[in-house]
Length: 337
Image (cartoon, rainbow, N blue to C red; front, side):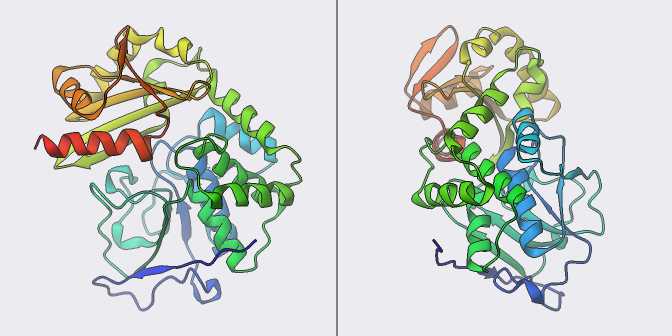
């Protein structure tokens, strides 16, 4: 199945001769082009970068180390890991899975950004583009889904390994198609990519991914806090939201004191106005939210109605930072300023 694609080219002040073309890759100069996701990269950002590099040329890279789930995906799909790039100086850069400058690697010059493929709202503090760029942002469940649609629209057949990793990106960000963010596009492309990858039961694949990201018993609290973490800017306030999606939530909620200590250190070191951490129980579809001071408590109380259990705010049927946790916190912060 092919879906019609609408590519938005955003023209701003520019000295560049021509814009990057998402609908006609042959026109692009991909010399020195890299595709990267956000800081604290997750599986969707990694796999969308891999897909974009295959479709448009260039190289998939990561701004930081990949997480356990992503490493499992690479092994399962027998795919080559994108290299970690510590310096983006003099690179052409395509962004996938984000558009916020607070999530941008510090060495990326906004003037070098040629394209953005994303599924998040343009809010808070988006990157300030200094040249013509191609932007495709859709309210779908994952950036990987959008990349898959690009391939289909361009009649590009993804090789088995890339189809497998792209499928993984969809399954990861939609929690195996169970998240509130899941769309019919995600479901349809999951089926199509599973066929291309030769995976007969992609739900089983997704469950194995959840298991791979769930065992954090030997990982320190500071690492878990930032393993799936994003900084936002709401009403001029720097707001950090970390998430740990797991099938074994009790294993993490029992470590509340460790997380409080880690959050106190991280909030101070990064000059955050607010910091929240969610242990998201993917089995029972519930977020368990934690904060560390009165300012954060006031925001949480304005944003959510839930039951307090041993210092964690339990939020039933809340599983998505993008669709549920983030927007609620944004509204509360903006209302209070």
